[in-house]
Length: 288
Image (tube, rainbow, N blue to C red; front, side, top):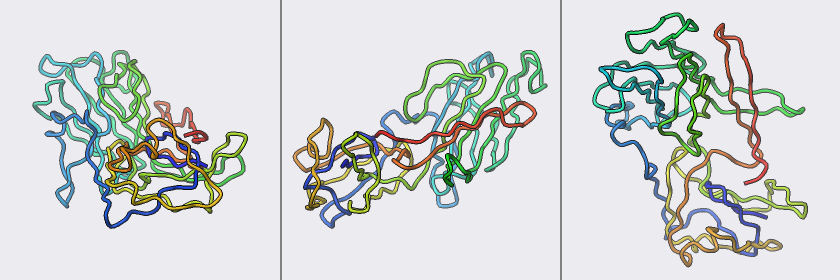
């Protein structure tokens, strides 16, 4: 059996496992330590006064604004992260917003940046960057009906290069860059069963996953983590590095919120310029 934090470091079951939050413990959430604070001064906020959450910044290669490299900030409303995307065109100085574009769920927008180059979407040296917001959807995969969260793609002739993003970002130039959109319904701690063959799955005998109110990529702290311990007969928890068993002698435990969970599926959809689907990539997490 395995209990995992959302940073996905697996721990096998033991006689002790964490249960739901206790009165003497708290779960707090903060933006990532490398959150782009300068860029954050440019984004808007929702009707509750919550700033939009930046999950991606890219360089718009070969494009300048006022003689500085152009960049695109992508953010979501923390109250509805799987809905609209908010796009801000700026430069690497993050001093001014040149364009603000809302891309609704299930829609796309063509954004022309700069003053040189073609405005034909796929023309030679086109300065158009197409942002597509693929909505969550249901499909049948391997004979099973599944639901996949939203994803966002940026398509361009000039290519884009990542500056900031959640998780590992390959430092290469993309003609099509696709990222899974943040979610807000993932647990801080997930309980997973590991069988003798090394396969992972969910198990009804385990405690309910510990929830966290936060977004993909945010960091969480659980205080007094030993208050969550309880006996679960027939299981054991391995003592792996960075595991819950090593959480500062049962005091504070820190992790990063990940949307990836055993048994869930994820999609990245790529489009042709005529809006037909080029590829839909389906991912399943089989090993934490």
